[in-house]
Length: 435
Image 1 (spheres, helix red, strand yellow):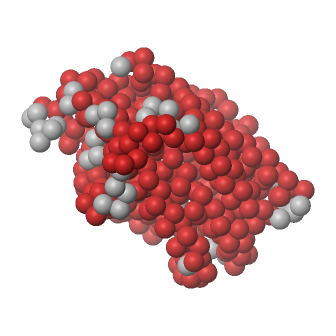
Image 2 (cartoon, rainbow, N blue to C red):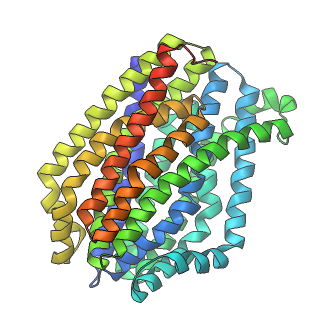
């Protein structure tokens, strides 16, 4: 188990690392332009994409856990049914988003705060990136299915392809063709469809397994879709609350001026780098926990949770030490604006408590996702968002204090760790794991 855990963690970290690094590269590229308006506009537009795309990241999360449990039971039929049903759902939602794109853009930007030039840049980015919707959501499903089958190497290769192509296209579109914020959106769209095409290669190799169970597959089973939607609805609520927390943080930041918004956007990207490092261990925990649940291995579940928590905290410590050593040089690279770089340096130390407190929460998330405990994740997120985040964030807005806004993120991470930890303690020590 230990060997499998560290192997999966290694591949997952490599795969995850390219995602925020590309986001940082995009931030650095937009930061090279003469004005920070485009960088701030993309940050504002990403509030909408957090809801539209990451709001449906349950397609990845639920697929991983359910697939791992099916593989643990050696139920090939169920594994393919999960894949096909999830792809049907992802395609439907993706094309629905395209159909409603103008309505979503108009309504969404009417709620977002920002200077007119910033909102105009964000609008350009939105309309160029929204075309990636079907590809992005189907990629979530395929990532989840391959991760649930412990095929992290495939996900690593696909992610590297998508993010390297995104980075290169960003340089071309933004710096050479001067498409600015719209160019960044088109780069992301093209890279997502390249990723989808890549996934079709290993998927084609699964045709022999698929033929073995073809006659048993019931794609449009009402009970099957109800089970999938029930789990997904709980994870959706949990994810929407997570996104709302960070969206409120960014929206309150915009009220402090575009330089603060741009600085917080840089810091947010750095937090994503650290979070994606830790998420390597979280996804490994998720995959193995799902398999162990399929085998009904209670002691194995206890061991993998402890291993995940220790590994996640160790990874967060390593990242924080690296951040302390290189932060000043990084901020100078990410923005030509001295004002933005100085603000990022001033508020940057909040990254440390946010990640250290959040590392255990990320592992708990992975563990309960692998167990398909959607209601646990939903309920704990409700408490963390409403009790631990919102009052302090609103206080920061009233006081116009960015330090208080960052404090709200730190307490939010503490709340997630506390609430999920209490549930895990009760399940283990009261022996209710399989009830």
